[in-house]
Length: 422
Image (tube, rainbow, N blue to C red; front, side, top):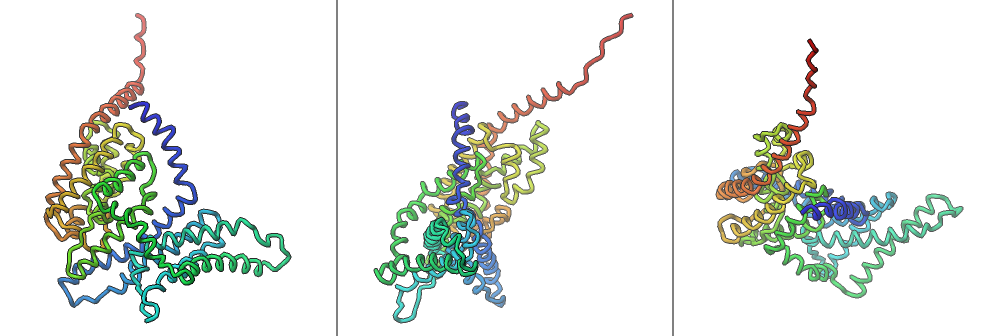
């Protein structure tokens, strides 16, 4: 175990952190984070609609959702190109590349009943987020490599003319590439990309897919690497899943996609207290015999109740702690399995609406999202399960901390003065 932890700390973790700092990874992660406010705006409207279903006199706020979350694919195209230009240190192209990506994404609407003037606007919504990411990335590649040419860098032309030329060429190349594929070669790029990623989407909606989508971020998080790194992989699967469920419900059916942001994060069942289900660890710390752990536990309990566990993960620490990393991984697997079988077995409702309210304490959020009071029983069951998982590991770590505190106290004791000779 010691050799494994040394390898994680001294070899794997530094290399993984270095990878996350690369512009190609950091840009995508940053873009996904910038989508969150638009997703949350849609979530607020869906939450509001719960009350509106009981009070129909309330005004309809559907358009707010339609023109925020409903255009998330379009927003993703802009943000991905924009953030890649920032991370690759081409800030002068950040806005231009983003706008070009939006233009390209609009091209993908053309093959759908274009002759009749009817377009499938759903392609720029949740189902289009993957297309937006790919479009933004391809446009970014064109702008990035063109910038390396340093065209007219030492030219005597006026600066504004040089700037125009250096924008016109990558804009033209980007639009020409996609225009050739879509209009000249008659390729429905949207359908091609969706079909290529269908196996990934299908796997993501399986139990092994759910476990990996929860376990892998938890594994890296236990080494201090933010879970935001994985949002670019998780979000297309999560958003497509909840969008399909919402559409099924609208058509009078029941959506069957379990693997959504709502299931993994917002319900507070798998992520009880945050990644790795650290709420029960926090409670154990509140009543610890070790002064350090008790103090930290009581400081961090507030954020933990709202599923924010960075304070406890980094201060305890759980990060790179061989004793406390293991239960974080175990909880990611067992919690995912319990929730999966509960929903698949009809013992707990499957989320049907976009409602990303992960910072509302569970089980309040659980009942609110699922409209199912059985969520309280599953919360209690999972709480007990997580507590039993953390307890033995915590007691071992507590013993170590107590020993350290005892040694510190002995070191701080004043030396007894020698008795004077009579």
